[in-house]
Image (cartoon, rainbow, N blue to C red; front, side):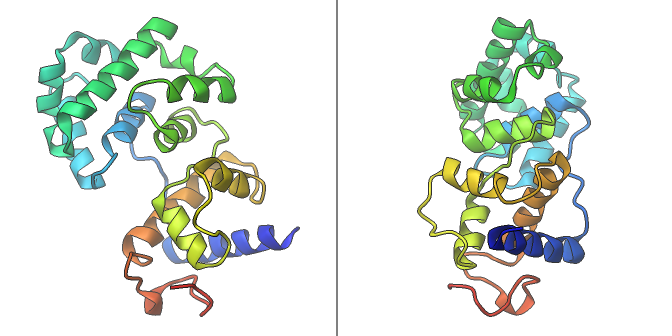
Length: 218
């Protein structure tokens, strides 16, 4: 095991011991997870839950139902998530892609190999690397590590990243240095979010940080 592997897994173990297994991503179906991944852009999860609840209450939380409602109606239902007009367009773009390429069947979509499917998703309006990888990992159970702003912040403070690396370079760093298992990719990202959201904020709370060894660059 290399030094990087030891460091990353030591951090993960400390987070796991502190927070426990996170059981991510919250959602009752792959489609709900995909909608959540799109809606969570630039908003807190509590707002996403409200928007998803609206869709579920109106019984339109399925590819066919969303395909058949207007973009305006969709925007109203997802209003709690913020930027609702933009996000409605993005959801509709994903639905158009799903039906054009896979006849509306998520199972068919996820039968594609990971690299090809990722390239396709990145060509859908409004789906960037983080959203695409969240869809692949959490909805598709693909071996892809999700990188977010918390990842960059935490691991640059720990001195394991410079902080200027590209998304793809950070992703490769993790995927090359932690076990290539879906459960680990899944939970490690969830643990990072927990730490970044609650402790390693722009103004960090180092006194209560479960991975603080006094070596962070603040």
